[in-house]
Amino acid sequence: IKTILGDYDAIHVRRGDKIKTRKDRFGVARTLHPHLDRDTRPEAMLIRLARWIPPGRMIFIASNERTPGFFSPLSI
Image (cartoon, rainbow, N blue to C red; front, side, top):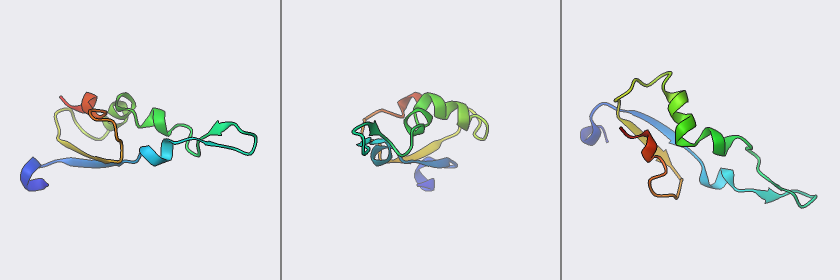
């Protein structure tokens, strides 16, 4: 990857299977990770990543997110 991208930072964002909700014993849909969807959206990630990664850096995102272009807001 470094040959293709040059110097870069990488993160792993697990979303798909961890965001799914399941019904609890009372029939209420719940997730084991209630803030994961909010915290792994591009807008929230941009705020968090700004602490460690300067603007303009190449970021490689490994994820099981199925929505094409989901992380596009992170591109410059």
